[in-house]
Structure formats: structure tokens, C-alpha cells
Image 1 (tube, rainbow, N blue to C red):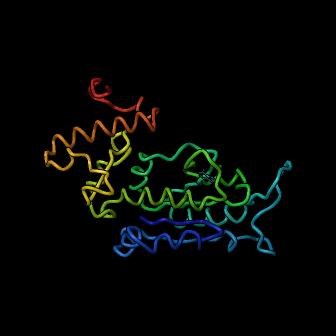
Image 2 (tube, rainbow, N blue to C red):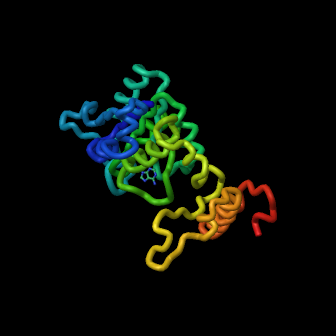
Image 3 (cartoon, protein in one colour):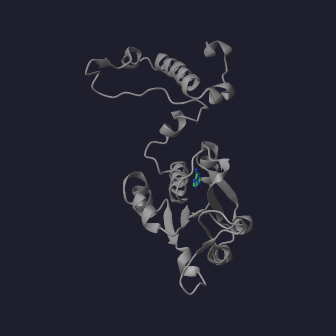
Length: 235
Ligand code: ADE
């Protein structure tokens, strides 16, 4: 999978791929990254990429020409690429999107800055638009990285242990049960006894129960929707 980042600040994004799981994925050739700066494509002689807002309003907006020029060029080179704009005004990005998008060959994330991007660029070029949550960030770089990370770990081979994908939060519509490691007694707090007895059926059942409780407490919306086989389980 290749990820292209269109951003005025590639230095905010590039270091994330220099450590841990995504660095290893790059070394193994499972993911590739490339960066494009809209400033390199502007026809403005002062290399500007933003103007004041039409109709008034505080702040500048990224004007259409540099992004339109660049994205049209990328699309000509690689017609199959998938262009995503992270935006606060969009549908929420969720785990099923991460899984679906992990099957693409090349994804382009277009990060806005200032007060946003001229809507006509989004209309012309977006295959999808996503928000990562109900808050407004200073630009699309962090949301692009968040989505890229969530997508990458669903690409076969990126995680060492593929089983970890199966049990974790959201894969089963439930939040993940608590996890522990050594020591058994940490400053007087003990690991749940059942976890240490080696009866995997019992541990599994207990984890399911704890996952249900956690989901009910933190995410009543998910709990309502969860595919709960046995109504008794909800008690
Ligand atoms: N750009 C600014 N805030 C954002 C958010 N919450 N999600 C996606 N893109 C954004």
C-alpha cells in the first residue's frame, strides 16, 4: 500500500514512520509513503496558497488552483488512487473503514490548514471525506496520520501477531476487556484471579462479561447496537 500525503507541513507527518510498527512495515516494503507540498504547485508569484474567505469571515482558506493542479496530475498518473480529505464536517471514521481501506493500493490524504479548503476542490477530487471526532484540530495532518495508522495495522503482515486484531476493541462491537502482565501483585493491586488459572474457556467467558460491562459504562451507544447473542449476557 502506498500512502501519499498532500500537506504544507510534511515535517509533521514524516517522523511518525521512523519508529515502531510503521517503520518496520516500511522496511519490509508493506507500506510506502510520499509527500506533496501544495506550495510547490501554486501559480501565485509569492508562492501563496491561501486567500481571504469569500463572503467574509475570519481566517484564510486554501484556494483551489494548487490542490486542483496537483490532484489532477496524481489522478492522471494513477487513475486507481483513492483520495481522502480529513474534515471536521464529515462522517466519522470508524474501524470498518480502516479494514475496508486496507485493501486499497494507494491512498492520498489531503490535509487542509487555515480555515479550510475551497469546497470546489473537495467536490472535484474527494472519493471520501472523514472526521476523526467532534472537535476541531488546526489541520488535517493528525487526522491523516490517525487514519493511516488505523488502516496500516489491518494490512496483512504489518502487525507481528495477527490474532491481536481479532480480540481488540471494535472488532467485536465491544470495548476490549482489561489486560494485565507481570507482576501478579503490583503495589497491592492484584491481577483478576481467573486470568491466572489457565482455564481458557473460563477466561474467555469472563473477558466477554467484562467487555460487556465496560462497553455499557463507557459507550452506551455501542452497547445498544452490540450483537449480543444471548440476552442473558446483558445482565
Ligand atoms: N480537521 C480539523 N479537525 C478535524 C477532525 N476532527 N477530523 C478530521 N479532520 C479535521
